Image 1 (cartoon, helix red, strand yellow):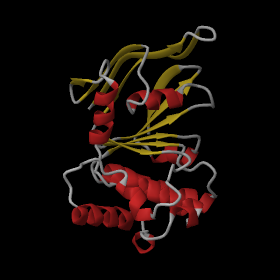
Image 2: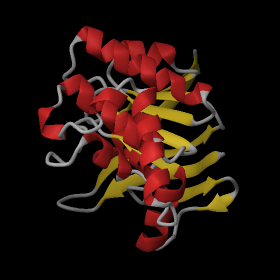
Image 3: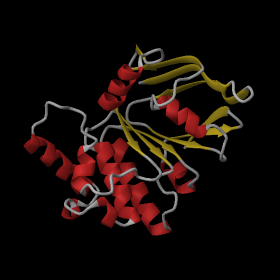
Image 4: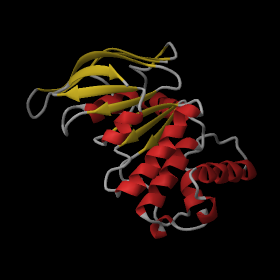
Length: 222
């Protein structure tokens, strides 16, 4: 499904710096892939390229055989809306919105009516065990609840790929384990999961581990 060929990234200012050396990487439908490595190694850059949030400096990116590199910003936004769901480290919830309203932000299809949108949001919250707090404001949620809402927001449109960036960072052991268990359900339901992580438990649950060290990519299978 995802084909990266010779993908690399470098910046020219304030001085030329290589962030990611050219690499090839394939990710298939329904796989779970953990991207691991030390801070500053380039793993978030790699995930950002997969998520079409960052354009590579070189190489090509194909999704289901269709070229992604070279598209306009509007086309990339539509691509992300159609195919990808994101779980960010800090949840990125709108504090004054309810949990349900935050999940609804993940629904990009404007053709859905209010009733269907509400049903989908409640279903997504139910999948992460939070249907009973749908009307609670994000500002009033615990750290674990916020992460669960963020996962529901990523899943509500049934994306082809879910990309999670350090989903267990700043969480206690029990809460982090619960979040990983939820993410483990993603490939079982047919979506691909890409996790950027320092958490050994997240790497252990993945089908494949991609290691990024000093911008160089290597791979091993679980």
